[in-house]
Figure 1 (cartoon, rainbow, N blue to C red):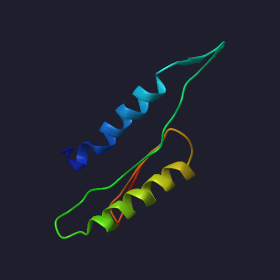
Figure 2: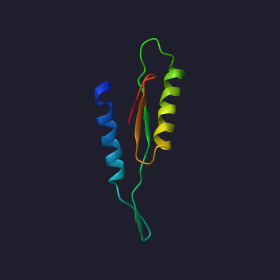
Figure 3: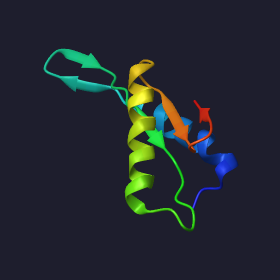
Length: 79
């Protein structure tokens, strides 16, 4: 489990590690990027609601550009 105050740092490491991989196909080379949406399940939350919040965060990250991370708690955004 990742503490809430470390979530952004953890996601940033994943974003950087994926982006630092150089792919080569034939004579072309390129980097890829990913978008990450995150949230936390808390006691009393339905799993469907937790997944929906993560999905909303993912689409918010994608909407704001490549190689982004957004966390959604229902009250605030972090990215």
